[in-house]
Image 1 (cartoon, helix red, strand yellow):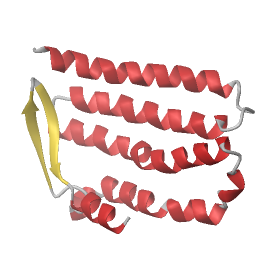
Image 2 (cartoon, one colour; image 1 turned 60 degrees about the horizontal axis):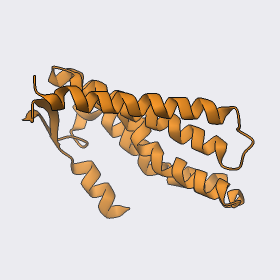
Image 3 (cartoon, helix red, strand yellow; image 1 turned 120 degrees about the vertical axis):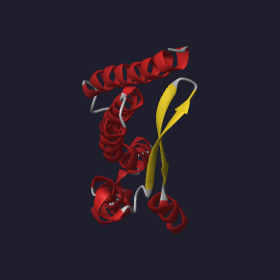
Image 4 (cartoon, helix red, strand yellow; image 1 turned 90 degrees about the vertical axis):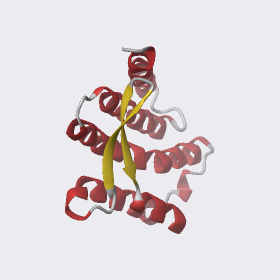
Length: 153
């Protein structure tokens, strides 16, 4: 086993531990401007890094697909949570009207639903394969929904 197969997941686990520690620390200071949305952002980062590390070390295609699917709620929640943090921290939280925040959630929710039901339609990943790179066995895929969503966004 070459070094990337050990180092890369270890870095991701380290990111998850550091982010969880920072979230726990900031939770105690949640009255600070921007702390609440930043804690939520850090929790999403923990989920993303942890599940991606588990995807990297999973030995089978089915395992990698499962961990990839579990990452998506965190992946798609990161941009709205980041915006929420920035607006709270800048003292502009009144700009986060419930309707506008819900409107921002439409594409992420569709993306998560398409990810979890991909076997029925193939819109998220049309072709999944295992790809070997520097002693890592990674998930390779064609991403038609992501490409189309980015063009629409």
